[in-house]
Image (cartoon, rainbow, N blue to C red; front, side):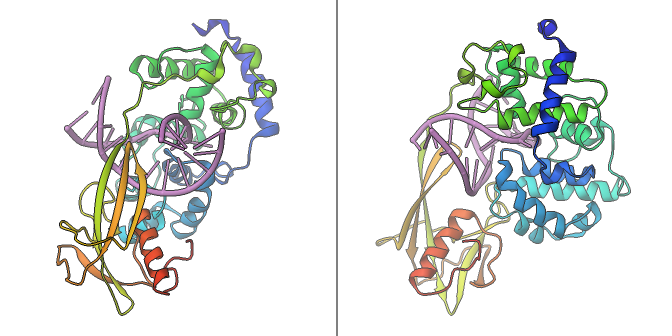
Length: 334
DNA sequence: AAGACGGGGTA
DNA sequence: TACCCAGTCTT
């Protein structure tokens, strides 16, 4: 299929471009596999600009696997607050414990062993292997998927089995045996800076002469999505003497995080109504004043100047309601 | 193969 | 609005 792509020339053009144009992202300045793992987990479904400050703070707070392994889950979730997909934080915590314990704090080098760490899938295992250990193993993230789909003019949806296999196969064939690290970084960076989802800069592309896409902006193709569905969420605002009653989430979504207590039978007008998107839902959050303590399980009083890790939409609601009462915003980042 | 899982950015 | 993002896990 891609026998027609002259690999040596392709690599040379791409890597030359990367050496000149690649960004000095924090996780590119290290080969510490732990730092690479932290960055890769944070970057799952999350944009670079969002991750950078979280990554810097995290590495200050948890500089190595032992430190993270010993930390409490509360501290871990707090450092993750606002990034979303909180199971990533719990998995990273468990991965650190596995490395600190089972592997005697020596980060495993073998792809299959890395792949067994919690929260580490095919992509992340390959990323650690290639970025930290310079191994020649393919990595296909959203950037590289887009670059390769255009390069091949791949019409198969990239989120289908067949499409995915075509991409991983091509990624493996294209990369060099030596210095795979810089090649994979370059392919990814090309997707981030030049081969962008909208308005790709084909005029600036170092490998445009190898690209078969006739309509690059129409690629990559994806399977159709579900329609968004409206959901209702009713909560209580119970505030007294600079303390607020919060409920800790125990089931899947936002597990471990704190939110406003759920209200099963709201009455009267809400103090506040807001909307937030979530996967293919649109949630309407209504917050009601309630005098009676909705004595639910997992509820606790928290001082508003020392709030725990909270679900972002609930934290915003709390900040708005407190501001109305003349109480200072509970979190500086708001 | 399809859904669940967050949140912020962008057109 | 809808789509996008250095994906993984469960069903």
